[in-house]
Image 1 (cartoon, rainbow, N blue to C red):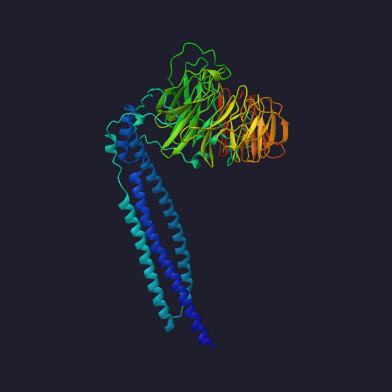
Image 2: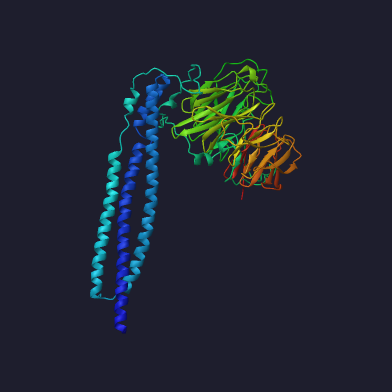
Length: 622
């Protein structure tokens, strides 16, 4: 081939590459324009349907107010729930499509920049006249490019028109005017409680002064995992896999002490954290004053304190509440909008994050030997439906007083309750996800009992507990781990039905079982801590002891696994940090120099510790 022919071939190739790059850039540009228009439409539509900003939500709030006044109006309740579900589902769908559109827009922009750059490179290589045969390819490529652009724009536009055409209004005014329907009893084991109207919410039940309507939105599993919403954190398991707290601190030098704030009233309840807010409860020693507190997570400033006044007024301290337990031992539960608190005699109340009271109810009186200490749990059934679980074990087994109470998180209405064949306990329930559905797992002498989270039906039970129960159960690697010092600790497979004591206990161990502190697991090992400071590690697969280590200090706070580190807080303020694994290795040791009985909260790079009189924030300082 002659040099002239070679140059012509090279020029022809450059022409083709230039046209291909230019055509790709044109298609990418048109794609970005089309997706950008669709994203804009979605954003406008999201603004229209946003559950917190839509004017139509005001009518829904009115309907919810009417529902509080007419709790037996089944038709109205169903329509309100349907409207709630519709508005939140549409908002979440719009948000998801909007997010995808943004990613597509960024991807299209990247393709456009790359293609335009290549076209610029090959354009500089082109000779003045092009070879005649290249013109034919140019024409074809141009036609293909125009056709592709037209087809792409048409598809995106048709999708936008379809979305706009299929969006239907929710008739909230009709919901508010729904006719009265007689109440029907709740089927199944979640038997409806005797009629007891909840306290009617104040102005926060409808639109507040700042225009925020009271539309319940409950957190996703991802949101729960990013916060510390209940006793022992997400799921009540005592694990914070993504947390990166410091190894040590020093109160004298101020090392890693972000702040220290007085807590107005005493309590054994642990802090819960949602976003940049920390919540605590407190009560005086005569139970004449019960309060819920909200602190700023960054500065420690007390943002608000609200009284809880449900229940009868008492002139003296109930004899069966020990001073060591007190009247604010149960830990609260929080979500993205609200916080829920329960106290020793059965007073329960809900506040929004700004301190406005949403609802209150009295579940007492409660008859326990030491005082009620079981913390609340939450089961999120849908974005607009969640239940608060209150395990009210009391009296002796033959008294038949114990029950699991299920309340609607949005209204405080009792959805149902299950009678429990147990006496008093101080354990907290957990909700676990199994291949057969979500289960509520509870512990009390003599049973570990699991209920269906959907309807409260008892699924299985294991006879393995004795005496007073304080350690709460955990769930790891597909098994429930539960036990206390008077009996044994067991690993239970949760796929049975009925009494599965003889068939579904994978293993059990009677040595060094905790009496107060709840265990924790990393999925490979189970770590237990006794009140006198003996740390024991068992292999989760078979329950074999791996090691034990004497910390030589008293403990009542439960263990926490943050990342791959064990954090153990002693009653005298000693914090020991150890490496999780088959051998114990101490990584840090600090002293708070105050009495500490509550389990700390872990979130991000911070630890929040409630001492006898203060709330501390421990955070790494550079």
